[in-house]
Image (cartoon, rainbow, N blue to C red; front, top):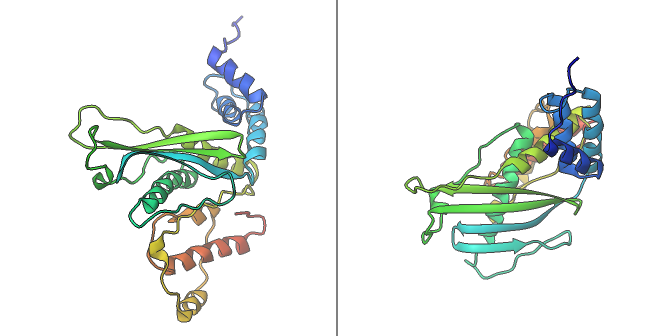
Length: 265
């Protein structure tokens, strides 16, 4: 007679934390049961834990708690904490780094957005020119912490190393990738009715004059077909400097909603 499989302590800890309501642990245990590697495969138990995840993240409020910059562009070190209100306003003189802070936030949110669209996506954009010219370490780090309903936090650390340095620092991506998988798996569980977070970046370069003819032109374009609501997140952070793509993106969202009354964005 085979002995029952011994459950590792770290798995027991995750189960205990999940039963106490921890979001990340609930999803992790759901994946354990689904994969069948550290726990015996049990789809019913997997869905039970995933239901708890879906209940929390559906229409949940996402807040940027803070972002930390290390040798990123003009900043050698900066920690920016957002307001607990619905709106955060950054005030400063020209050239003080307001746009740099927004760009760093957009990098992290774009990584989350891309992983909601494409599972296990490790790609993110960094240029060598973004490393502070006075950097001794030869690397730049952008670290972001998001909060879900002010109760659960997820962190992400994006890193760019110069090619010629001997000691390189790795990015820390797993928590944002896990959060993205929560949205994907919960959406599948809820038959494609889960609300994805609305993430977008609208830099000052986009603020150009809108002509009435432009609005008419894009309104009259032939209706396109879009089958996946995750397309609403595509190109949300590309920083295009005109309203054309803005209208196209808005139109995509409207078409998605009209094509399926059950589809929620």
